Image (cartoon, rainbow, N blue to C red; front, side, top):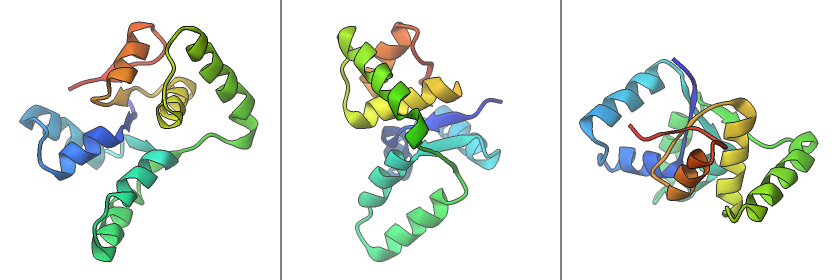
Amino acid sequence: MIKLIVDTSVWIDFFKDHLSSSLRSYFLSSLDNQLLVITDIIEHEILMGALTKRQYQELKELLSPLEKLRISNEELPQFTQFAWDLYRKRLKGSYTDLTIAYLSQAYHFPILSFDRYFYRLAEQGMIKVITS
């Protein structure tokens, strides 16, 4: 099995118990096998959704064993070029989405997401997206 980046949209549906049974099973299996990866920005988005200090600590503990990707200072020129190339192709995205897409491409990890922006990039062959 391959590692995959799990986008915030999937995490939210997981926490709300809104994933289909097959996707939930796949998610939990991947989590158990340490195949789920997040980015520093995804972690930030999830933690900012906590309503209480206790919930924040529980989320932080749940996410702590996951591999976390971030753009290093050395990668910033490549990231900027990546974002500019997408902009020129009329595939402009938010900083968050561009960061996730860049890391997906750089590490060759597909993204598990419900975000249409990633589907558009996948249609262009820029990244791979898993929907279920």
